[in-house]
Length: 233
Image (cartoon, rainbow, N blue to C red):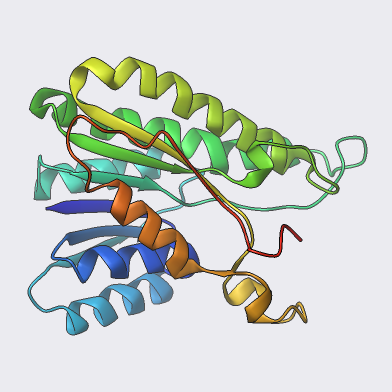
């Protein structure tokens, strides 16, 4: 069994990689920073020697790099079982005063990356009538919030991609799930002053994705909404 995860060097992406590796999946990972993605792959390879943890450096905002990443995967396997479009970028702001170019950058990173990588990896899934795509959206996909700006717009768009893809893939046996996480404690929260006990762990999201990927072929979890018990921040 094989899983592809973008933005896998840390946080939610790394937690997903570890959960699937612990259950026998071989990994095809990418991230922008070579030292970080290499460290993650090497750590998981050493911890789970029965699987293969491969990686490539890839800036998902660049279509050409996504194409190279997909081509590399195809040289390794034609059997991608799970694709997790996790990579994304957050820039807080307001539509009326954001720096020019913000929405273009966030569209490329948060939406186009999932769109193109999915297109590149879909044909073998459709031929096999097997596969599961998880798009890591956000609670920002569901409701406008203060300082969301273009980030929230792009996450709404990613949700739209998931909905359309889900409908298109029904008859091909390929499942599509939108994941809407609230705040989960990762390294980006270290300087926030927020207690780790106040928000979720990245492992919480990984557990939900793993479980959703292992239902019967007749069942598809279309949406996963997961928030901190005490509510959103």
